[in-house]
Structure formats: structure tokens, C-alpha cells
Length: 476
Image (cartoon, rainbow, N blue to C red; front, side, top):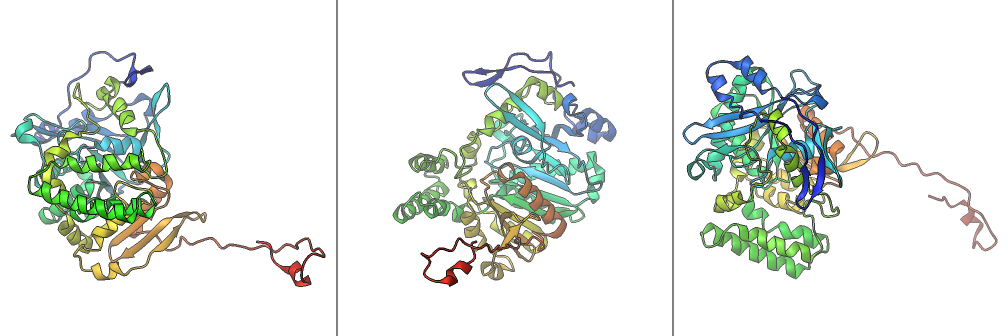
């Protein structure tokens, strides 16, 4: 189970390993352990051993969520390193088709992926969410990351009902393996297209297992109402001066018509990405994740690390293929992509704590897109939310973190200086936001702007001044 040293060089297709470990083990399927009541054996065999990070406790493997089709979801679980008895937080990346290992290694997990011209590495993250929370990362749905189905034609989940069914089966078995978490608060979260996964999954738990400790949900850049949010995509580009009003209205009409044709089966859902893909280079955007920053592509870095033979051995996946982004999945989802989860979210907003946060530089799912959907979400406090005022969010040191509002159980936050991957762009602010949401329901009121002190100093009075009164003007 050792994580062997690997040497890396620059290749034509990126950084590739020169030295690999010996024969690799078979994938670890944990459901047979759980069916036989071998709980301690399952925990022992799933323990991840990383010699460089021996202090880090974690578990990984496959849980079989559908025996008929051979559907297996891969997970990597990190118990909290700070809070005994603290909450369990599930993390799901979106896409559809992005591995949750991207969230782990690139956004908020205890391990942080990095790369330069000659080296790929993992280090301990300074602002890890796995300190205050026990973090459970699940590759979802099958076909993403290391999760897979043995019968692709029948086992693939391309509806929200199918995705939710597998996640529900997973969490039931996870609680068998880690029964102590049954009594701890459960938060389900993620980002982007997980804005559809999370409400559907949480709503199902609310309906099916009332004794489970569901406490709330949290979603960054939430894409939960595609019919409303997709046309609003171009409002951000217009507000930043990248396109004209006429262009914005043209693209809005084009996207609305495109959605109609996709729902009717006349066009493929990938046409949406093609339109945006043609537009962004025209306005000088190479990175829609963040409007103001050209950054390293984290997907290939995470893919290289997760695909290395040494790490595959450590996380018990055998020789399984890793897909950091299954771009075929969106096409197979088809019109399902444009089915809204607004009804499920509305019910959750009335019953549980809900955090919806955005980065102010997020082009993919801008704050304007989230607001467009929230303004028409039919929950009990919709009218109050639609007229609410935002407050500035200040750190204890007087730094502006962003803006927020709290309406009932809904906490709405916009993080300053963040793009689509808020925990990556603003790690300290993102962690502070999550802790305050879990502990207090939203940003706490004590964060106030610092008092600004103006110092008066005597100017250099000269005869040229029109009045002696000018010598007493404060210099700010």
C-alpha cells in the first residue's frame, strides 16, 4: 500500500511518470464486507496509507449501488482532524461529468495538487475543509472519476432519478460502515451542475429517511434551474463590458430557442457549449472559470495524480481508468440537463439550512444567473427574498470578503475575488464562510467594516494660497 516515489518529466502530452511501482492490487469492493457485517475489516482494508502524509486519516474504495447492472461508486473519506463528533459533509462536483476528486485535490480537500514546469506534487492544504468537517468525496454518477458500471448501456445514470437512486444506496451503506456518523449533522454540497444533484439527493433523504440527521445543503455556482439560468449567462459578459446590449439580447434569444429545440429532441445538448465556446475567445476569455485570471488547468494536474499507479494502489482502485471529466456524459444526459430542480430546492429552503454562494468573477454560473433562478423559486419567503438588502461581509481583520443576505434559512453569499472554483480562488474566505454557515446559519453579524481614521496634518502654507483658511484643510 506504499506510495512510491515517482519521477516526472515534461512530455508532449504533459507531465508523465518515468518510474512506476510494481504490480498493482485489485479494486476494493466494500459492499460484500458490509453485507456480512465485517465492518472493522472494511474499515481496515479501506484505510489509505500515504507515507508522506502519515498523519492524515482517510478511507477509500468502491461501494456497489446496483448489483443488477454492476454500478460501483468510488469514494474518498476524510474524518475531521479537529472536531470530534463534528458534521459530515458530502462533496459532489458537477459537469455533468466532473470527478469529485477535482474538488478534493484542487478546491477544498486536505491534499492539494500543484504543478510547475518539471514537477507534479501533492501537499497538505492550509485551509482544508476536512479540519472542521468530515469530508466525503464521491465520484458521481457512474462513468465519472473512478466510478463505473459493468453494463454501460443499462447501468449509466442519465436522469436525476437514476443518479439520486445510486447516491441513496451509497449513503445507506456508508452509514453501515461508519455508524457513528448516523447521529452527526449531515450537509450535502458541491458546485455547478451539482446544483441539480444536491437538491434531488437531499430531497430524497428528507422524504425517505426522516431519522437521518440532514442539517442542510451548500452549493457554489449553483446551476439548478437551467431554463432560467442559461439565457442569463450573457448578462455577466454585458455587465463587464465584454458584449453590447444588442449582443446580449441576441444570444439570449438564441439560447432560449436552443433549449426549446433540445427539449423537443431536435438538437443535441452539446450545441449549448459550442455557442459559448465560440463566443468566449471573441471577448478575450480563455478561462471562463475566472473572468480576471488566466490560471493553470487543474483538470490535467488532478488527472495525472489520480491516474498514477502509486496513488491507484493507495486508494484501492486497481487498474481502473480515471476520468477527471467525462465530456460524453452531457450528451448522454440530453434534455435532462434542462430539467429544473427548483421545486425540490424550494421545499428544502423551507425546512433546512441552505447556502448558495457565488464568486463575483464566475463566468460559468454567475451570481446574476443564480439570482435569476432564485427570484422565481416558489418557496414560502420568495417575496421577502426578492426585496432583501445585501450586507458587506468583513473579516475580523477588516478585509472585505464579499456580500451576503439571510432570509429565513437561506444564506446567500457572493465571495469577492473568486471565480467558479471559489475554494481554490479564495480558500480562507471559503472556509470561513462554511464554518459560519454550519455553526450560525450564515455570515455572522460581528464582521463589520473597520473604522477609518483620518489624520489631519498641516499643509505647507504659501503666499499663493487664496485664503489663510486653506492652511487648515485636512489632508486625507
